Image (tube, rainbow, N blue to C red; front, side, top):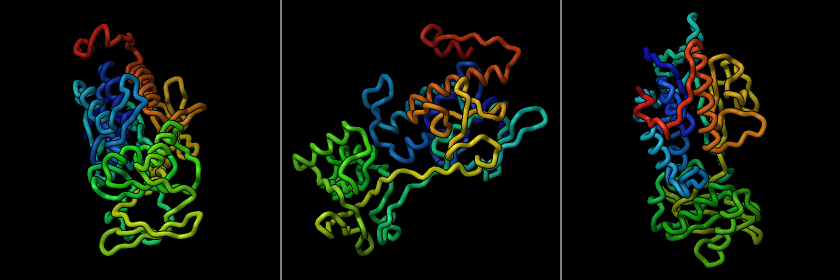
Length: 335
């Protein structure tokens, strides 16, 4: 059995930064994640996607941010259980918690911090004939390695930030990029939408509005897509199709733990991001409260306040003295 101070369910950015904040208070953490690598959505969904709203980083790739977080928490030597899903959470007679995974791993901890992002998530798949048949053969729902599109024709579909951002990014990599959108306006950021319109204007990409992909064709690998637009049906040749219609979040076993749930998110107290169950916290995209913004930087803030509260919960008789890393550094705070 693994013993630790804080058991963190989820190894995404909020969970990783919680290790740092807890480490400053000399609390040890062990993280559990169903994914085979750390980073959460940063590594699994869009590792090469640029992120622009992390303070101090005008631009940072998602995987680079995950790597930097790992470097930041390395001095605190967290433990990891990856590729295993938490199935049960049990409170023991001594007031501690027992986390059990689907592989039989057991973690005993004094506090639980749920940082599961969107929970167990899967891509929303559009209704396109033969879509499933070409999965892994030209159809993918994420862009993990942009280099696979170099010199190829890739068709993206969607009207949100992911579709816009990847259209802009891949315009300099793929031989040709076509963005297909069912509407004539975008849900994504105005700046990104403006860049996409400009790329289409100068002929760098093809932009097809009020259009949708209705079927795929090919022998062994995707070769062509049939589109339905304002002027009827048409066929375009392409080797790759990336529908980006978001993710469908599912809480999975978390739904059965007695937590207050609102629309697939865990309700928390914004004083310290505690849940309705004493000793359990929820930080990052998996929680909800009035005014909630699903931003990485908000998860960092929540992790900091959670760690402060967790220390008081674990060590009620000890005085908590807040110290700034700019004054003491990391090494002195570890001592």
